[in-house]
Image 1: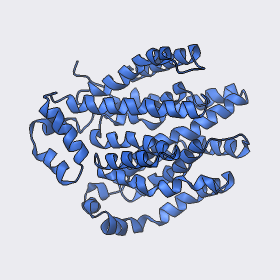
Image 2 (image 1 turned 90 degrees about the vertical axis):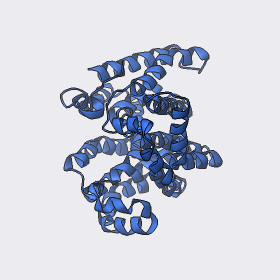
Image 3 (image 1 turned 180 degrees about the vertical axis):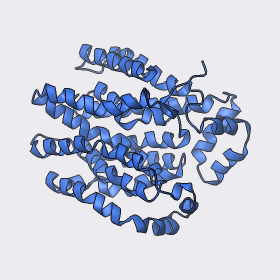
Length: 361
């Protein structure tokens, strides 16, 4: 019940502030949502053994062997961040507090940018709600500490890209790759991100429908690509990571497919202006959503797919706004129930791992 209480607090806090100062971003607004920032930061920062990797990062603080391996992998940014934590004697909890601080700041920064560019059509309250119940990134960051610093940087890097701040975007991508090498996959999606310029909504829909069949047929090519272009991760092919994930990991992604088909129905019938940034983020979502197809052959593809879970927020935000505009309030309630149901199970009767909270306090 802890996470449900926390989510309810976030909703009440943010919604109240938005209702009071919805037309401007004055200091009172930011001061009002400051409690949300504090809990976004300190809940994961003060965790105690929530994820399976917790003890390995504690050991990393006291023993240098694992940290040296990070350096040898070329993940220099994480190495020096951790080295500074040790140098200033922040204690074994330091990396969790620092990573959670970075992730919470980036989450709110990205949410504010989306809120601003859509003129509050995609409200901060809705974005944070979906961030919790759909992406599960708030929980997963307490498990894969190092990778999730990079994962949280991804939406920011793409938003900077669509704002035509190309140097800043490239720097964020490079920094993320120096946190965790798998972040280099983001560079592969940059050409895809600009497909919205010349492709109609209907063609994007057909691409979305065809992609699972294309990805399924490419399963056998993955090994060649990794050996040829990513030899650092060749050992994954013969490890447990190279084995297929359980079918449940695929079904958990398929669960949201009816929502996304509903989005397509609304999107194709909508004639209103859509900002280039939102169209670009939708293109990233279209090409990344079906990556779970590769789970059927390679478990390590989960490490790639998580970089794009945030983008699932964008089509659902569009759908909520479309239903709100048409005053389809019953459908909004049904949509809320549908997307919230699996999250309720994860934090109650099925709670385990990062969905079962424990703190050092």
